[in-house]
Image (cartoon, rainbow, N blue to C red):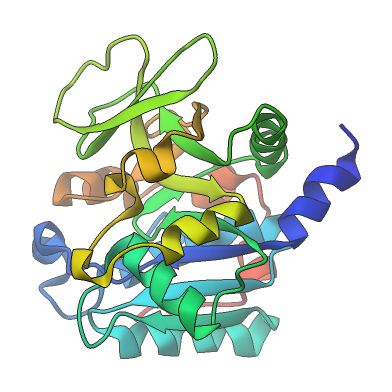
Length: 278
C-alpha cells in the first residue's frame, strides 16, 4: 500500500476527542476545581488532553473536534491558547441541553452540519492516552475496508478491562461483541477497549439513525448496528503504549511519566506550544 493512501484517508478524517465526562472517580485528584482532561501529568507536566492529541498532531492533524459538557469554559480556554501558539484549530461540540453520549453527540452535530457527513471519524477518549502509530493503524483499517468492514477498534491485550471488553475472532479480527465486565486476565480473543476507534464515512448514516430517545448513548453500546462491521486492532498495551486515566491510582502511575520520551519527541512545545503550569 502506497504511503499516500493512508495519508490521503487521514486527510479526509475528522478527529473527535470526547472530553465531556463528569469523572466522579477522579474527584480526589482535582477536587472538582478543573475538568479531568486538564489534569497536569508527566515529568514535564501538561494537561492530559495535550498528550492525548499529540500523536495526531505529530501526523499532521491540524483540526480537532472536542466534545464538552462538564466545566467546558476551562477546556475551551486551554484549547484556544494552543490555537494562538500553533494554529491548530479546535471546534467545540457541546452536549446541551442534555447529555448525549459519544454516539449521540455525533448524531446531533452531523445533523447540524458541524461534523461532515462525507468525512471519516476517529473517536478518542479524552482520558485515554494512546501512543499509536497512525500508519499501521490506518493501513489495517484500509485493509478491513477492502474486506467489507467499516470500523476499527483499538484494543489492548493486557491489563484490566475496567469498562468495555472487545470480544473478537482471532483468525479474522472481526469484532463479535462488546462486554462490560471487570476482569483482571483477559481471555484469548478478548482485548480491553482503549476508547479509540476509526469509523469510515459510511457509518455516519448509522449515527444519524440513532433515536434521540436513546440519549445518552455511547458508540460502544450500539451493538450490531455498528459492531457487526468492525475489526479489532490490538496494538496498545496498558502502561506501555496505552495509559488509561480512570482512577487516582492511574494518576499516581502517570504523573511522573516522561511523555516526551514515551512519544519519541524532543519537545512537546514544538507541536503544542509552550505551557505554563497552573
